[in-house]
Length: 134
Image (cartoon, rainbow, N blue to C red; front, side, top):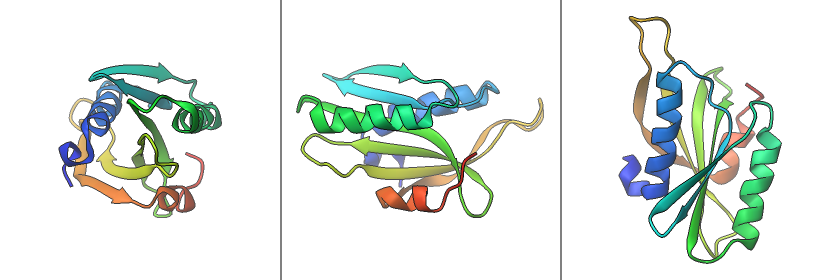
């Protein structure tokens, strides 16, 4: 699935994650709010995954009906691989949609960041069920 098919907020969230990973930075958890085709980004500390998740869940439960939300973070799956996880919360839907994007991290000047495959939709609990702390 191409990111465009998942919605503008997923495209924006994936681009934010890619920009940080391409630059060799760690990807700290992000919450992205789409309001009237504008994006606001809330960054969290590297170890504040549960805080970012709580903020995302609070926005889904109590946010206005004209906003869409995304929570972006890295998770390590059973295979030992780390993936970009994007969860999208839509107005009126308590259960977020989840997507994962595989990638190869940057390893020096000759091994740049690279997406592997396409964005893959998964059940909201699937990525978390397969993960362990990165």
